[in-house]
Image 1 (tube, rainbow, N blue to C red):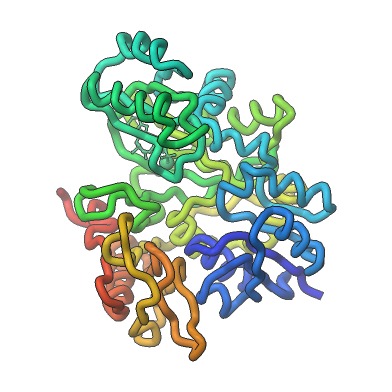
Image 2 (cartoon, helix red, strand yellow):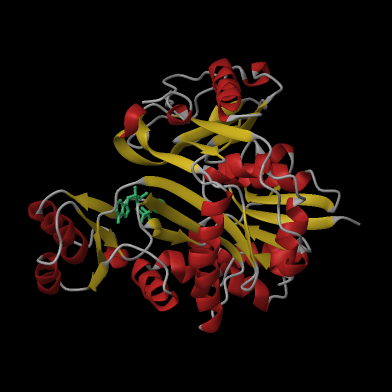
Length: 424
Ligand SMILES: Nc1ncnc2c1ncn2[C@@H]1O[C@H](COP(=O)(O)OP(=O)(O)O)[C@@H](O)[C@H]1O
Ligand SMILES: [Mg+2]
């Protein structure tokens, strides 16, 4: 009898998780709550509106493992409740997920662990914030403490910018309680790289490093999005640099969380800036990144089911270290026109069957209509992932796949991974 695994979430990240889990001989039945038209080909859809229904579904389905994708249910305590109900879970407790859900607390943990990060001051009152601004040069960075769906960070070019951001967060409460505290931070320059590692609170197992693209348009113009593309691995993050990240960032952070009796079991995702002083932490997340996961998992030779089950069981030390990837992956997001602003849904998607065999298509905002046709159902609709022996080959396959697909007003970036291929 194979394992019964419930994946929580309904985006491209969850389709990639389901796709990789499905390759495992250990897996019997997969479920996805709520899932999308892509996950539905591999995992039974499970409707569940809130934490209570998710826990009830996991129990009813006799899940041997629940894998939680998004940050919100983790911060709300889904992993805690599943553990109480006796269901093994991949994903941290709410207390450990604070490393993502409170940027101020993350700074405290980093300071305690001696982890390199931008100098910061934490404030919760406007007058104190104004005083603290005296000690910053511009640009500087203003960050809402809590979860703000990628909208809570302002790079302030001037004192006026900073004061406007502070007023909006602390006074107008644009982000609600998430902006009741604010982190003021020194601005760092350099290359941004993400390193996602699996951890059971003791052992750290890094996955291939990745770069993602957050702005809507080419050359990093336009508004911030959930992510318009990604690639992995990252050539600048060589073996030696990755060892530095493990030794100076990932391991000390994992140890500090465990020492505080809030061990993190799941993903520790370090958003890094590489500068002359070495890798600096911009932020931590406590879950798989999206779209990074969609390019990282296809590079993994290991059985993901075994890895995630080992994390849930606190037995990651029994897993051998992963060899560096022997191939590369590039993912291009196909988004609805207008995203991240207003956009239409319910549009028919054409050409999915024309995508060449060597590209992967992960669904995000899609749904099936009554006739089994795939319609758009969100801002980020699909990700096309190309794999190859190097980033150039992977990129060609990703765009060949993307160009086979169409829907009205489709929007995509043309420059994903281009910096690694052309000198700019
Ligand atoms: N100290 C910093 N210096 C320069 N850029 C930063 C700094 N902190 C954040 N950023 C930029 O802002 C983006 C978002 O910040 P981050 O801390 O990752 O918050 P979130 O992902 O929750 O919005 C980063 O990806 C980075 O590009
Ligand atoms: Mg970030």
